[in-house]
Length: 151
Image 1 (cartoon, one colour):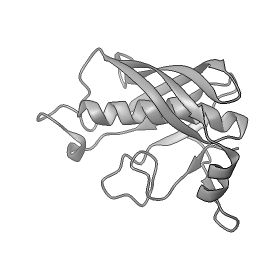
Image 2 (cartoon, rainbow, N blue to C red; image 1 turned 90 degrees about the vertical axis):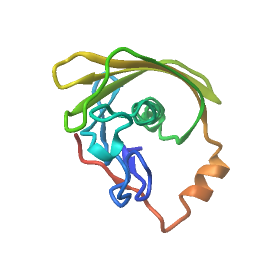
Image 3 (cartoon, rainbow, N blue to C red; image 1 turned 120 degrees about the horizontal axis):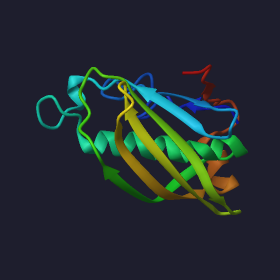
Image 4 (cartoon, rainbow, N blue to C red; image 1 turned 90 degrees about the horizontal axis):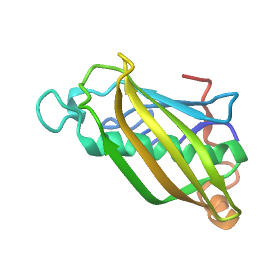
């Protein structure tokens, strides 16, 4: 499965006016990379990107490892450690890697860095592999999420 977008998704949806409009790509190493530039509307304190926005971005990039195996995912647990504040208007990049995979779940880790290469946050999570029945309900025949050409 290509890295795909869902139009109204807060993290990747191009049609979500309040969203992050992140883009993602699978790397040759099997990792997934995502990028976005936070806007002022993504701030908590003035000049600081809200931690929940960073968590959402990490959640998405880690979970998207399932797309490498042509599957969709649901988040089970996510633990984030913040290391540095991120600033609106400065591009962020996240890279995720799979740590463990089984038929029903997988574990992943990831890191968000700012445009200076400084670590903003790290995460580890457990994700449930969506059942084929649920996948079919979310992606019924005739509704195709559009592939992402790259970051």
